[in-house]
Amino acid sequence: MSYYAKIDENNTVTEVIAADQAFIDSGVVGEASQWLLTDRNTSKNIHYSDSGEADNGTPFRKNHAEVGGTYDLARDAFIPIRIEYPSFILSEETCTWVAPIPLPYNIELEQSVAKYWKWSEEIYASDNTQGWVMMTETAPE
Image (cartoon, rainbow, N blue to C red; front, side, top):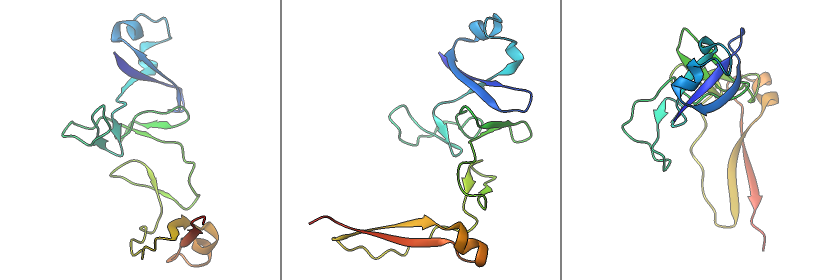
């Protein structure tokens, strides 16, 4: 069984189904040309095994199709919904939306405090060399 994405006239993914090629070709679900093969084991241009581990498999169309995402014919890639921030840009390597500034990795860990990075559109709008903010959550006692 394979996975197929239905693409509308705007190259938006409107449906994703598991089916055999013969079913797609039968026309029961519409014109076969509206359906493109997608790989549920491909994400960010990496192929994963069924157990979720990156493997040596060949990634297919950069990402698994998702309803609301798009298909880019020039890149032969499925691009996820742009739910991130307006300043995020499309990565040519992964065909996913990424921050315009790399995530900082210099986190000092403390046992009692959980730290994580959060993107701030306001900070980025005022200074496009900044955008990530260190957030902390104190562990409950």
